[in-house]
Length: 193
Image (cartoon, rainbow, N blue to C red; front, top):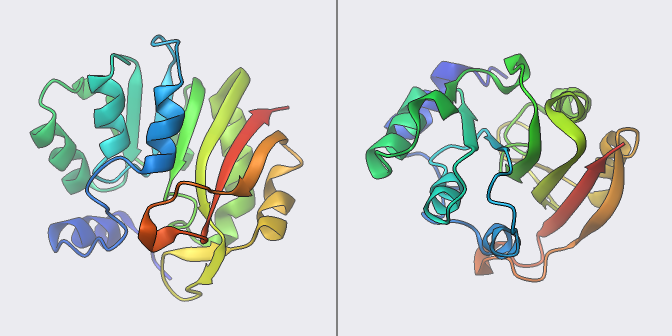
């Protein structure tokens, strides 16, 4: 399975983006709305059209960084939000990042990467987070697909990847998912060990 830059860019070019809900997801919006420190350095990996990044920027967070393999997805964000700082848009592989962040927001990225990379994902997240950094977001609590994204899984499986690297603050069924994902999402808040 080749989940290459070309694969993802073609999905955005052809609008084959069934996961894209067209706005910031309710659970992440709820989490963002309670954040008080607007100086947080935030990363959204595999951000796609990055509605969360747009919402954060418009809410006064100036240190928001987006990474995606798809240049089309990044161009879509820049077209919608021309004031988004160009130097905070990374057209690269998440695993090649070499910076640190206070907060990383997970929204559909984990389920988009090859499942063979899930432990590497956890290891990279720890590397990218500052001391006391947090990984917050949503994971599918559903089997989904085995041959193409989105790849699903279960809380038990996910904990295998996260527990070696994170203190588990919140890892529960999401109470405010959008209707099409209700009962199928876990909200996570993980603290770097």
